[in-house]
Length: 255
Image (tube, rainbow, N blue to C red):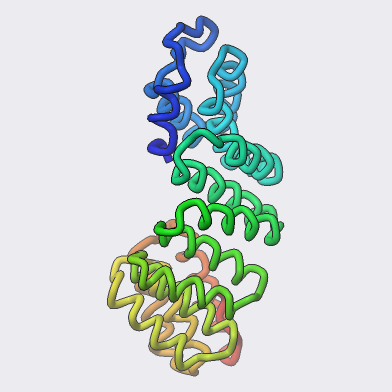
């Protein structure tokens, strides 16, 4: 999220050269650090650490947190990003919300759903007009098996202007997992219609169709997933489900 700190970076940085890293205290250096953190997280973390020692401030800390996410050090990333989001008291609420949302994602990946929910709730309080934050919290609710709360957040996100395909895909999953296959199928059909190039939407509809004993339709949807995104996690799930259906016709689809 290279857009999170450009204004912050410009305000905090003095323009002094950092000899050890060839970074300067400016927004361009922040962007460079963030790109490195995403592409080669270990290098990004080292760059952020040296930059912080040379006055990189909050942007350097944010870069370090993103690098920790890439390194799958989710607890450390959650701590780093949550602390940062709370410390940014002089910055725009929307900037703080984005950092807290990233902390929430880190906690979710770490399996600590209560911490994830707390950070995302704080983020929504800071920026209530951003529907993507509701989608993120809905994912946390679903991970905690609170499907009612997940659907409530998704309903609000949908009316707030969030991506229809994404929201309907998640809501279809919540309905499926809570046992309402009729609503799940309606949402899954809507997700495919709204986002015909989304492998996740097709995967969700395939899983719902499988549970509805529509094996032919499920198989066709899984093949569509492989066509759209052959190297994605969705494609891996589709391959597993096709194999499982061939071996165990009465089995249950994997999400």
